[in-house]
Image 1 (spheres, rainbow, N blue to C red):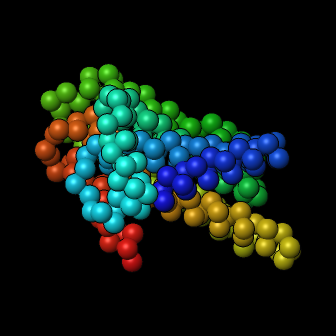
Image 2: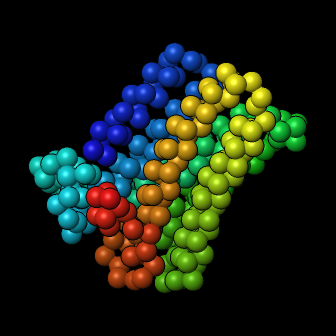
Length: 232
């Protein structure tokens, strides 16, 4: 099921980008593609980690055969963690850029430098989470690991919540019913895929880099492994 959703996101975003070649379509394409990349990495991680219920296997992989095939893919933990990092840190960047683009708040429209400022945290995280750099910074330094993991978790969620706020403010500022109806459709899609992102964004790439570690820090943020979420 999740695999089919990823394919749909990629195809829909490509079609939209072809039909409407504007900045909004590009940002939306970036959101869908980065989410698909993140989910791809997480699916591979789940398959290799194992220990999930049959119901969850069917939801995520459709069949045991597909799950087994993914489980035995030849991919290093460094590459797998980097795949998750790219999706995890690019999605909120594209989301907030799109929210800023739609926003008609005078202060936001006047200060176009915001589009560059919001890229600082994603760039920093992508640099830090390069496998070699991450190991260099965190080797035998649990406190630094904690700071990095907390920092990345806080800013990604902050970006999503700020984007929601900007979209809500913009929605209530639209007075024409026709325009409001169209905008509701847009933000419904944006919020839907953002909620999907929030469900899986707790998966920190550091957990993949340290796949065999047995520390409470690396066992956190994987609540999506709970089959109850998918069976309600």
